[in-house]
Structures are given as C-alpha cells and as structure tokens.
Image (cartoon, rainbow, N blue to C red; front, side, top):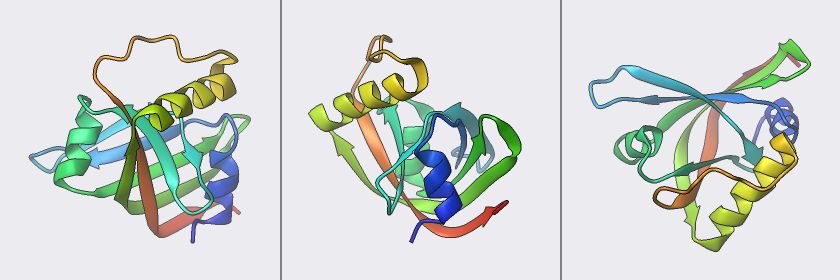
Length: 128
C-alpha cells in the first residue's frame, strides 16, 4: 500500500527526486515529474536514460516527492521497480503529466521509447 501522503503529493504538480544506483554503486538523483495509480508511484522516462538502465540492473529506488508550495511537506518512498508500461499508454501518460505540470502536451522530442516505471513501496517516511 502506498503511503497516503506520497499518493496525495504524487497526484499534484509536485516535483520528485528519483534516486537510483549507478553500476559502481554510487547514487544518481534527478528531479522529475511523478504520478500514482493509487498502488504504485509512476515515473515516466525513456529507455535510453541512465535511470532506466540503472533500474534494469538494480530495481531499488528512492523517490522523494516535495510539495511545490511547502518544501517542509514531503514524502520519501523507498521501494523497487515492479513493472513497466510501454507503447501508446506511456506516450499518452507523458502528455497527461505535461498537461499537469506545464499546461500543454509534451513538446520535447522522444529519442527512443517512453516507458512508465511502476514503483512499489517497501518503506515510507512523510511529514504527515
């Protein structure tokens, strides 16, 4: 079950920091848009990106979602990759996220293929 604060924050235009592990074990952290299906955190990326490669090798991940209006309101989810969705659904999802965050469809060129990463919570911390 996803932490209620994490789920609430992931439904709004709040940025997340996703941390994965590089091949040598060092952490890699990047800001990103985030979403939820109610059970998982969802991160939409492309298959050529380092975070995707990292999660294919080591499924452990931490996602920190911060309220855009109050940085003291946050949720940290430590978990693991449990699935992915590709194809038209992933492409439509990035447009949905772009509408939420930018008010328009996703305008950046897609270099490879969009993929929705489904992250299951193992542990959570939040300010609620």
